[in-house]
Length: 414
Ligand code: GLA
Image 1 (cartoon, protein in one colour):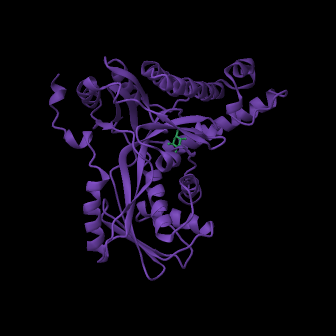
Image 2 (tube, helix red, strand yellow):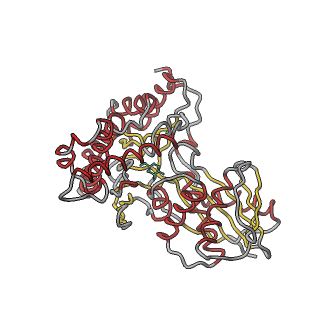
Image 3 (cartoon, protein in one colour):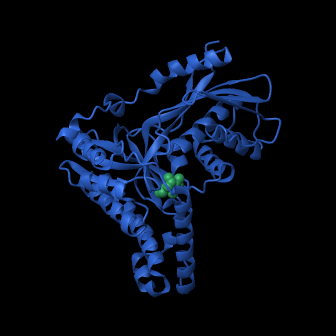
């Protein structure tokens, strides 16, 4: 098909340069900007959610994987309380002082995530000297791959290292979420920050969002000749925040109604509600809320079944659950859109695709696909190429590896 001849760059979509290579221009930029070498750089990845969508804030299990696209934050302490932040991607600088209350800088929105983590550490009673920081990332921004969580976790990693703070990675994730909720003002759950902080390469991260316990689940993709393919719809997430908050409220309202109806056994969250409970109390829920709850309860079941399938190496079964997850997000939770549905439909119709679903909050952004390696080229052309031709949107294909979470790279020799 002629669409395969689209003049789209292919290499950068396939192989992201490893952090080792990106550290060289990062250090150089630091040197140019601040006249000295950075002490080190913290790195935190973006993520895809394999399954368990809109479940984290309902206290269920989720299964994201970190991807090999990340944010780097190079750092060096200063002799005063100034924080000088430079974004290599935006070529912009923003400054504030740790000696004064930390406010926002909406002329440089990227800097608010760094301000947020400095603010949350101050709230926790942690302190240290001012810092020079240079930020550079290759996580697609605004595409549902959690670039903001990656930035928050990398920034916390940099401040932890520079200030010698005794915080484990789990605590870093929780602080990053608090920074996002209370300073940035987005009511996200815990999934993205946990993935950015705690993921391990070639594993998915199973997070119990009620107990906050987590486990690494091996992802035997290469052994099975499979690739993790992220397809960007090219559609910026619209309505995401308002609709996201509305879905959270709808879940809370469904829970309240179920609590009032299930007098014998009052559920503490939708985690405590089974599909049989839902069917039994269908009359107490307006139809839309019933569908919202059916997605959440069904998705929680799919995560459990999916983890069992992964553990026994049944990736076909896992792929089938991904497809079912997309259908439920589309029909019951209503967070998809025609573009994501088309991208998913084309993928599911291609031989060699085991599963395809929207990933993240929805309303645009990306899909995640489990694809046989030999079908990746066909995916690029017959799924994303065809989608782009039909919609006029710049769809893109990213072949990802499941990567490590937060890490620190020492840099300075003087
Ligand atoms: C966003 C939020 C997450 C999660 C997903 C939906 O990515 O940041 O906490 O709720 O949406 O699964």
